Image (cartoon, rainbow over all chains, first blue to last red; front, side, top):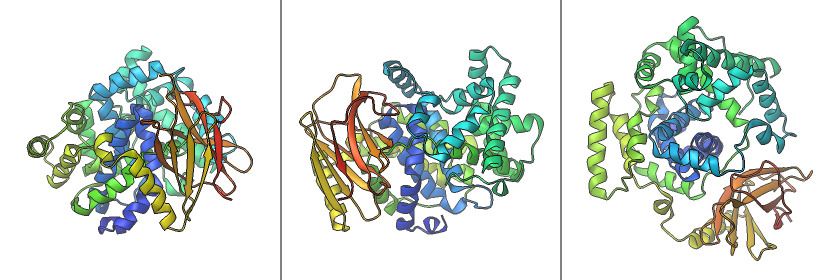
Length: 174
Length: 278
């Protein structure tokens, strides 16, 4: 990242090769539409290039930072309106919505994927629904609260306890 | 990248409602006013920033383990071109790189952007952001510039898809890669060009149009026969171009017809398969 911050295009290309799949996967998870997900991927990497010097390796991982930039942009795209309608249409067109059981099937042999899946399963159902409604669908917590018929503080608290469970599981089994 | 050791992640320092708020913020689940407040807080309070980064790492680890989709191959070169002239800014906080809502709203308002109007939008957006957030300006201007550039697939393409296919394969061959090809059962052709770093340019041609709810899905089948999918082929006039990898040694690349949203394992017989290696 230091080389990217110094304007090194080769280092930027290497960063893109490492993380473009993650960024596009995050954007497509939220937006569904691949074309808009590609736009978000492009904007996200330009933002990373611009602010590369600010990245602090002592605070967290490059993937965490870049993923956060991409996710925020994807959520904003969905909330901006058109992307949300597109998302609903696309999801309605699909045979059935993708869920976690489905996505884990093809990759069962890969320990890492299985491990994360198992860790998602350590969340209570309410926690899982709150985390994925927010992260995967781009809903705000008040929207999640309305959908669940739950109070605002309860939903926020579920989000945090869900993330804690995910983190604790990932750490313990690492 | 997804290894996730406790030593990297000391327990976060916040408690109670603040901690709940940062978690919801990291999920991008806050609404406007509350999000703005936390955006400001993580820029000014290292404890909040540390907790924010912690959750971002957890979420990235989760998504890194999801089946990986591959962005359009043309995007890589487009970005490498753009950063030749794109400014960098050393004097910002890392969370200044998180975008504002303006970006998305502008992008989806349908501005296709002649040079003149795009320029005007840049000034306007940047000014609004400075007023609202008191940012240093350079980042806001750069972000606005990014959304004002033509970004759609049409703009990405420039040369025809066929030309881009040829150029992408040639680049692999120039780098000392190798190419193999197979006819598909429905009359299409699938070509795989594997570069020395084991990334592959996959091209398809003469793919018959499918029903609206079906699509062509690409698979990397490893030497043990386990399939993983880099995603659906984006087909344009019967052609597709995608870059995937790394491709494991001994793998074959195969195409099946699947529901448009994709399947997690092939549900139909492959139309054809190309070994990545000889």
